[in-house]
Amino acid sequence: MLLRALSLNAWGLPFGLARSTGARMRALAKRLPDFEADVIGFQEVWQAEWRDVLIAAGHRAGYRGIWYRSARYGGSGLLVLSRLPILSSRFVRYRLGGLPQRIQHADYYGGKGFVLLELQSEEGPLALLDTHLHASYVRRGEFDEYLGVRASQAVQLAAALRQVELPLIALGDFNMEEGDPDYDVLFGLSGLVDSAAALDRRQPTCTAPHPYRAPDDAPYRIDLVLSRSGRDRVAKPRTLQRVLDEPIEIAGETGAYSDHAGLLAEIEVESVTHAAAAAEGSSVRPDPQLVERAAELLLAGRELALARQRGERRWAGGAALASLCGLAAAGPAGRSRRSFLSSLLLAVPALGLPAGAAMALLSEVFVPNELRGYDEISALLEAWR
Image 1: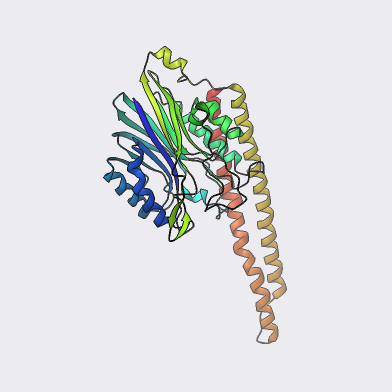
Image 2: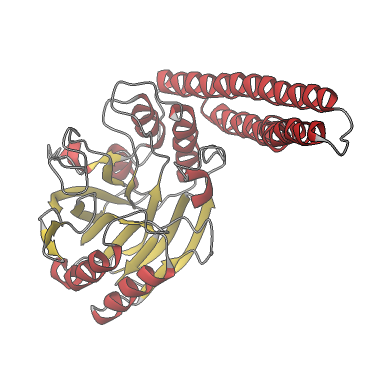
C-alpha cells in the first residue's frame, strides 16, 4: 500500500493576526483535490469559520473522516481530513505549553498538543499523528527560552508513541530543525524517520523571499513528515515534495497560501514478518546519550523557570512596597489644592497594585505549575533508563 499524506501549517490565526486569511483559505480549499492525498493534516486552523471552509472542500473531494478539537479557545488548531475510515482518536495536550505572560506569542492560549488517530486501510489499521510544537520566536543560533518547553513536548510525544505498535505516519509543524538538540531528542527517543532526511529531500518549508516574511528572513525547515514501522508491517518513505509554495494573487497583490509551504509524501506500508519489521526500526531503542541530553534540556528549562520566578517575586515585592510608600506619603485627602495633589499621589501607587498582583500570580501559581510539569516529563524519561 502506498499512502499519500499532505501536511500544511495553514496560518489561520484568529483576530486578524494573519494576512488575507479568508482569501487564502478559499484558495487553499480549491486545491485540495489536486493532490489526491489519502490523509491531510493541517495546523493553525484556529477559527471555526476557516475550518468549515476546509471541511466543506474536503467533503466535496471525498474526505469522510474528519477530526478536529472543538473549543472556542485552546482548540489546538489541528484539523485532519481522511479518505480512510477513522477507527479511534485521542488528543493529548502538551503538559508544558508556554508562558501566559507572553501574550504576543500566544502558544500558551492555543492548547497545542497532538492527536493520534487509528485509520483503517487496505493493509490493516495504521496510526496517524498530527501535531504542532511550541515556536521559538528567535533566529537560529540565538537564545531560545522555549527550548526546554519544546524538549518536554518531544519527550511527551515519544513517550506516548511507545504504546503504538501500528505503522505510524506523523505530520506537523515541529518548530525544530535538523541538528537542533530537541530534534535529536525527539528522533533519538521515538524511532521516527524524517522523510526529508531519509530521501535527501531537505527543502525549506519556510521559504525566503516570501510575501509574508521579512526581507532578511533566512529559509528553514521545521515542517516534517515522519514515519515508523509497526510490529508486523514496515512503513517507509518513498517520495516527498514541497507543495503549495507558489505565489498566488490576492486582491491584486502577490500572496501565498500560507507563510509555510506544504509537504506531500508517499509512505509505503508493507506486511512483513515481525523480525523484518524490527530490523526496519519498529522496535524503539532510545540512544542512552540522548536520554541524558533530554534530561539536561529539561533541567535547564526548569532552572530558567526558577530564575523567572525569582525575578517575578522581586517585581511583585517592589511594586507592593512602592504602592505602600506612595499611599503613606499621600496621607488623608482634604478639600484644598493639597487634596488634589494627594489624589495624584494615591493614583500612582494604585496603578502598581494590579501589576504587582499579576506578578504574584505568575510567580506563585503559574511557575509552580510549570515546575511540576518539568518534573512530570522528567519522570517519563525514567522509562528509558
